[in-house]
Image 1 (cartoon, rainbow over the protein chains, first blue to last red):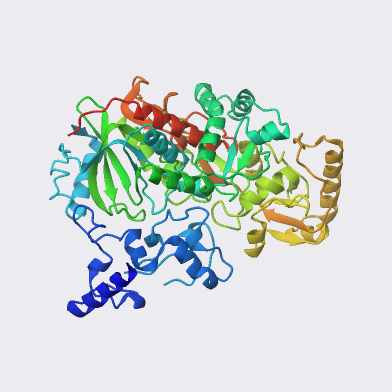
Image 2: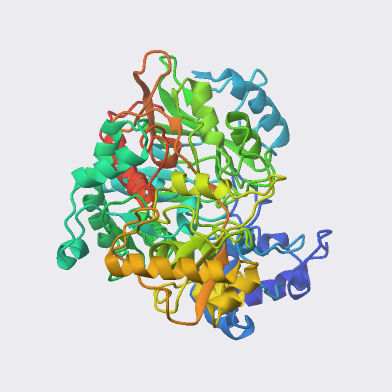
Length: 118
Length: 508
């Protein structure tokens, strides 16, 4: 699945001429087609241009479990945000990770965690 | 079909703001809802805390198709961030430890704490439902600590706490269970108003999907229909300073809240606008165990409930003397702490501390020390010095308290000393304490079937149910610790079962 998605991104990158006017994170700038994230499955009443759902992010980035393992060595003793005792997988990726504006740490509505975020 | 007057303005605004909403035919220029629903299910539940999840699961177990709407980008609301402490009358662990308890005893404790304002019929429903609700959570995989705790105002130890020390230990498994049961769960989906039929029955909701809680007019407006009915389990309004200040001017912006940022009460307001009977909205509880040194519920709250209050003491730092029964109910303790002010009305934060024996069960100690909100001292003299407490007075107070523990009787405040230990073993652990707005005892009137009652005749509003913190009257003037989970789960289960048993309306 991941390979197919990656191939798709490459194809779309080659085929698409219009570049998004939206601000994008450096590691996402290879993606030139909005529909990679703003999928049809994700649309409300046919409109895709709302924040993507978790399935959209996780088709490339993996599950919360995968992400928990991935960041375990990078969080410098802070609690693992992807294996939260409060939310588990019941949190939108976009609660923290914003693509077109600065990301935020949702946990810090209460806590004081220090994370390096993309 | 008619919508509320208040909602009509919103409809127009919403229609203008939302991309594509008008073309989809949900709203006309006059703000009247037409008969087209974007989705129709049997039951819609609003809110994903203890009450909402219990209602959704119960209705789904009974065969209803259920849509659950959560306005925040996370499931669980306050429930997911609460301490996971659940008062259960007659738990298996109480039986094992020989603790004599019963729903009637729990009822008496709650009536006492309610100071004459409790609606006893609603309370009864809750206390008798605690053991079945506890079994319900265990069935869905919730894990509890292997010991019973004693919280303030309860006459016996009856608190079961999740192993994670948070209500997330309950909401996470219930969310998973709801998914497995086929409940359609939406985050970032905010209810905006009710849709009623010509007879006044609530048959649907106006909802903003892809809602951003920081931006009221965000998202896309849709109409959802409910053949059997709607359960509102949207929680309290502790974070809505304007609303709570209008109700009780003393609860102004100077007081913080332990609640999540979404606890702002819009669904309560929508029910009031619909004609629901308000009950005791001015009964707003402050949590007496929180700290002025951190945001929200934080780490100190649980340090105090599991260690500081039952096993240590809390003192006025000007005198080194105790000033309240550390295990009194929340209202008695909060009122006493709020009186700790100087001649200019500025807070003089009391200090709660415990020795290294008493601190053993405090799971939040490690992080509390890490973030500097709990401090460690090798001697009582050092502790006194750090907070400016007269050291001689403090040591005298500790010695007196230790004697009370040895004799089994608190001569100062008659605190129950079942779990108390003598404060002797260094190091000592301390935190500053100041109350925060925590829980709304008030809300809409419901009956024992969780039906919302009309303000004009106190009869049920057809198709409308409510459960948990958004309902009023159950706890009267002060809710006991551990009784929000009890309330949420029990009334949620009641609402879910009752709404699932309603006859289906033809909405097509």
